[in-house]
Image (cartoon, rainbow, N blue to C red):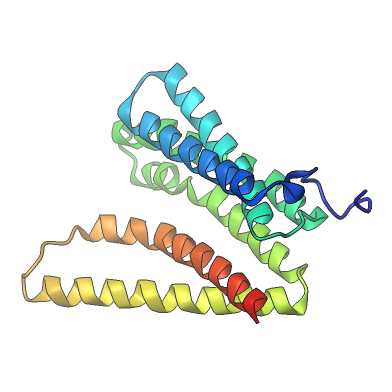
Length: 204
């Protein structure tokens, strides 16, 4: 029996390897499928179902990723999940149903407030991640720091390469789209780098 407060994963960490990876792949399918549904329809009910599917996919991915890495889900991991999932849901709702209202506004200051409203849940998520890292042990903090550094370097180099290619007109770059993709790209590379760092340290 697990010690109280050390895990909320039940027996997933005791599953066979193929079962752990199967749960992880199921989470990926849930998440990618929900994103596709969200982009493919404008029906309100279907979008709500897609948002629920995205949250479910993230939940499964969080727990299955821990199981794949043979790690326990601790109280701080559970706290982070409870904070980030609702904030992510609020972010998606704001992007889908609040930002479009800006097209019908004429006052610049009000339009700016509406357009910048998605930043509130994003800042809340950033605060939650920072607090999570501060509550980790020294080894985990080092892993997160390495992952953050790798993410900054990779995304910066990609942006610089795009800028140089666009400067000589070899490619056409939508500046607004590039700026919007910087944060998601940082998060993606950061997550992959964190996973790689854990595998590397475990191999040692």
